[in-house]
Length: 322
Image 1 (spheres, rainbow, N blue to C red):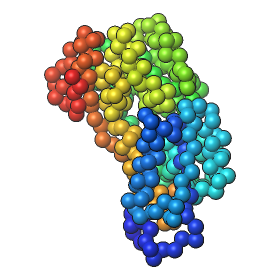
Image 2: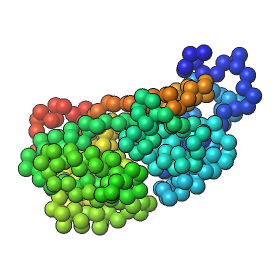
Image 3: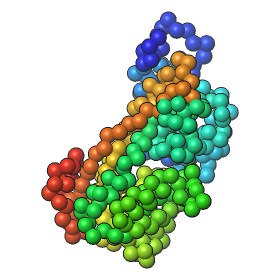
Image 4: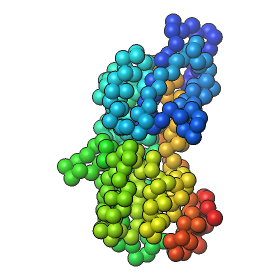
């Protein structure tokens, strides 16, 4: 059967496939079931998997308490799941430590190779494959955009998360190293600050930015900034600090967002899980790279900051928020 045809009535399963799902966040979002889990269900349903008959879901939510991810991953393995869908580098790392045999289909992993999840994107080599918005050029492009808005930009704060994997001897994770290198190449002095959830000290972080004389802020697409993006943007605007967020983060209220949204990864997971159910091995199944860079500019925030967005940058924008 070709990939994507799903389950047919001619196929008689001895038992339903059991799909585990591991999330950093919550089971309920804005009063509704987690939309990403619902998307996973819908995607597999479109491929012909009938819930209850062909597939059963077992989801675990860390509710922002990321230290719980390892025990939740172990729980899923103990449930005898056939595959684990993970959402985020920390969730993926927790699942990887919990099992070397159960297939893991990962998303929101910025650089699977750098954090040791995959040997290469083309041939992961272990029990993990998935979809990534890995974009090595993103940091340099973000700094170029910031420089077009603030030509004399010299000092930039880079806001990250203290719990992301792949820390080197300097205490920097791969995504932080990439941004530090890009900032220095652009002639800036970077200042890396790390939040720790679920109740990060934003006041302390912004005090440190002031001490470091930061002139702009780049928020990385990692758990704490992701969860606190609206508060981060509000803090920054109050302190007249221009912000650059990741792609599709215009709901933050920050000045700029640029890149590929992690949500673009999610629709790819059902098809990859379908391949696994049909016998594909994660070791030989390439990571799908999803790249769709989009620029959003918030003119309301621009006015509050007293800046002027260059007309040529406005022409490039996919979305302009008045």
